[in-house]
Image (cartoon, rainbow, N blue to C red; front, side, top):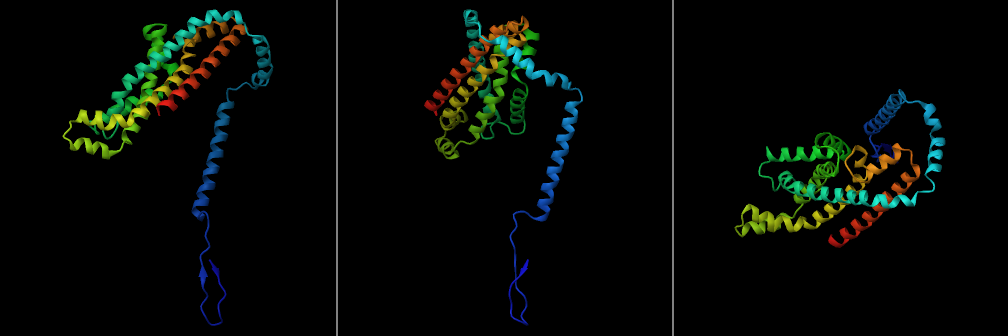
Length: 277
């Protein structure tokens, strides 16, 4: 508060001075910063407990040494990568397709405006989505290799299980954001529940669905390249084999092929999404 000029004998007038934050808000902000710094210091101490800084200091020299062994890449190794690369593309594509097929009903059961029960069915569907998203595809592959053995099937199922949560979450959010007036118009014609979903909701979410599907396929291309590290097939198995034998020129060739594949899939996915949405 600040006093304004006033005549003698008249009461002083005051005007309120605007502040960006109240004193309590400023105190809370500073308290948050102090807590964040304390958390950082604690995490740093935990990280340093088992860190050997001798190896960290030597890391740049080791990186230069491995990089020099990678150059030049071995172009004669390319023919051996064609079949594993094809397997990787099949893992990503079939896994994405399987994940989408499983995610569609889960998404409709999780959406608040299409679920048959908000007390029982919806929580179960949301739990499936959260469970799928919580476990990385590499962990899924590791578990499946132990269950059904190494090979492409483990990689395909791992990609599918991982895709359920991603596709299901984005799709059920798109379903919940649909225009209710179109649904009411279809309902007013006497349509049943399945007809309302088919004619009132599906046309609204179809563009978003294709965009989500292509986006997930692009992500799965990247993830499927490393599933071979745990025996789930694809080009990752060649990468692991070359690393184990210290064939660094072959490793460089594999990394270039993986990079080129990811770049092409990214460009293709972006182009298809622009055409569909």
